[in-house]
Amino acid sequence: MSLFRDDGIVLRTQKLGEADRIITLLTRGHGRVRAVARGVRRTKSKFGARLEPFSHVDVQFFARGSDLVGRGLPLCTQTETIAPYGRGIVADYDRYTAGTAMLETAERFTDHEGEPNVQQYLLLVGGLRTLASGEHGAGLVLDAFLLRSLAMGGYAPSFADCAKCGMPGPNRFFSVASGGVVCGDCRVPGSVVPSPEALRLLGALLTGDWETADAAERRHCREGSGLVSAYLHWHLERGLRSLRYVRQASNG
Image (tube, rainbow, N blue to C red; front, side):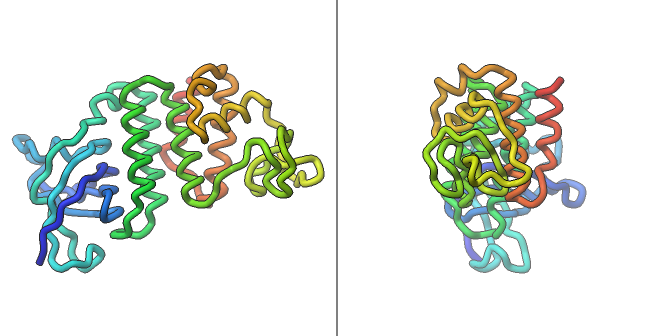
């Protein structure tokens, strides 16, 4: 039996029994962790209010043995709020749907429980902080997060040089199967021809050029989001459930 402490982002919660919940967190030092929080669904529980999705928390766990992927789940015994990002996210529908997609993405990119993924953790913390602040459009923040998650997973798309032969850009065609833009010689069936502005926007989001991204027209943002969704779907082999609500909101 052992105690360990870590800070993490609450990804989702599930009901357990009459008053408990299973909390899924992405932590700094232990990767994705599922743990039981006793009594958090009771009305008077202050503990439960801290363990809601989007919350950045410092949690102490009690585990029966050192293996987090053992037969039993660890218990959340103490928790302190580091940053309540949910306050700035859940009150706005666009931010909420974008944030939900970010949480789902982070969980999908951390398949194995107990394996640290510090880069994904830090990316999620920074993404939620930016989303909660409202300093950039929710759709832009989400697309930047998705592109950078893909890049950290080894699927960085190219938006300038040809993804197949390396021919310097700009290149006209875009192929999700080829890894981004391709030249005329490397063009494959199914390639599309996005606007130069949409490709420039996506390149800016991938590199963190927010001045360029914030100046993009809405039609180019929608076009870019469609490319990101297709690229993500291809590499994850199945899409994110939460993305359908994001796209509905952006088209509403």
